[in-house]
Structure formats: C-alpha cells, structure tokens
Length: 116
Length: 116
Image (cartoon, rainbow over all chains, first blue to last red):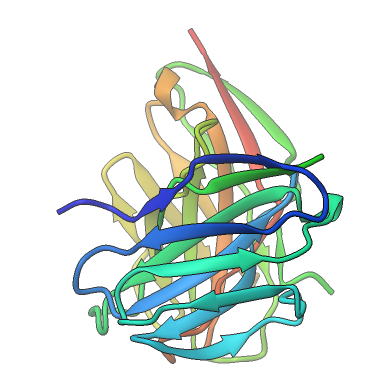
C-alpha cells in the first residue's frame, strides 16, 4: 500500500505567478486534507474534502487559494498571484472512512514553496 | 489561548536512553483525540501514536508510549532506547470531538537530537 504522494516536492516561483500542487491520497481513503506549515510552526489546517465535496475551509484559505478534488481521488491546490508570504510547506493528508478508536490522518511528504 | 503547548523547543539525548517530550492541551470537549507525529528533515509527517480521551490505558506502539494524564491535560510522548534515526521534529496534535473530518490542531513542535 503506497502512502500519500505529493507533486512537486519543491517549487520556486516569482511573486505574482500562479502555482498548482497535486496530492494523491492513499487508495480508498475518502477524506483528504490540506495543511500549510511555515518555518518553526506546526501545520495549520486549510481545507478538507470528503470524496469530491469540499466540506470545510479555514479562514487562512484566502480567495487566491482554490482546491479541488474532482473525482474524489487526487486533489489540487492552486495559489493565484503568489505572494512572498505564501512561502511554506504545503502538506496533504488522507484518512479512512472509519477506524476503530478514531480517525488517523496520514500525511504526504509535502510541497515546499518558495516565492521570490 | 493555545490549544496545544509544547514547551521544549529542543531536547538532547544519547543513544539508548529514554526521552520524554512534553505536550499539554486545552479543550472543553469531553471527546477528543491526541496524536504524535514525527517530521524528519525530509518534511514528511509520520504518524507515531494515538490516544483517545476515553481510553483507559496509555497507548503504546513499539518504542513509543504516551503518558496520558487527563486531569492535568497532558499527553507526553516517551521514546525508549533512543536511536540516531529518532533525530527529528516531533509534533503533538489534537482532534476535538469525535467526528471524522475534523482538522488537527498542532503544537509548535520539539526538535529531538540523538547523539552517539
């Protein structure tokens, strides 16, 4: 069973450009989460999907950010008109519909974004 | 107020010794879950151990155990017989409530350095 994968692993872009990240969850995991982690901090929640439905969005997800999960499998996170403050690690996690004792989120390796 | 507090920015331990990483939490929800994740320099968040608020016994997973003191709202991670490969950032996280699809709230992490 492969884990959560993310692509690309690293992205350098210039301010004002658009970037898109992809996340492939563990197969059969119907829940998918995006988090952002800045230097020296723990991850912060951005948004959550159950199958293809986006059920929750954090206030951190400004209108420049959009996430999709069109077929309930992989997900994309797009940042438009990037700003230097968007520089961070973007982490994706997925979880099973049900686990005894409670849901556990399994994370991917992350995409490190640097906005110049 | 912070929901998850990790007061140790860095910890140092020698190989084969045990180490305790502190975590305190704050919630008024009677149902919650506590997690520990390891983040090596590569960036991936690796799930280590889970403790549910109603679990009577402390969770254990191999060399990892969780010292859960509900009245004190603490959930310390104990790593026995440290190995060089344990050097990483460690995050404590909480899920409030028992509903699936709830975002994790992370602490700021503790850097563990294991020396030979």
